[in-house]
Length: 184
Image (cartoon, rainbow, N blue to C red; front, side, top):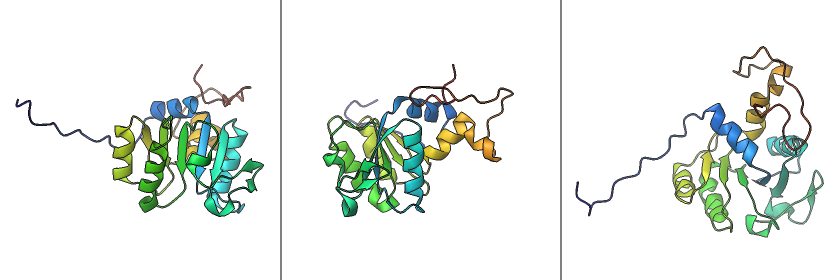
């Protein structure tokens, strides 16, 4: 093998994610910046913000048009750089084309977020490659609210198939975001 020729790096596939991978991310993350958060209570981002707050996550809504106001009691910031805390995960509620710019903005932070999460129908391979190159984990075309509900068994309480079989009844556990998500 010629040492002067660089080897192409095989990109991570984002077609599917193991439950273990998603569970590890949701267990590790404590702070979430939600880019594209809406104060409109019929928008999906509003529901996800409300749900993630109820699970004990610290969520920072990002929406330049509403900067300085509040959504669900949380101060809205105009950009990721305006958030006064380290961000573990950036949840992108923007279209696929905008995901690259949001990812670049996230990677300019110090420390770099651990996770770049693109919502349902949002995927951008260039943004994913850039984030992974910087050491961040990437999830595309998934919703953390749905994944949390599915993995904790909560989604089954409403009759939705969680794709998880267990004879054990899900138990609500106390403390920070441990409502049945962790396998203990």
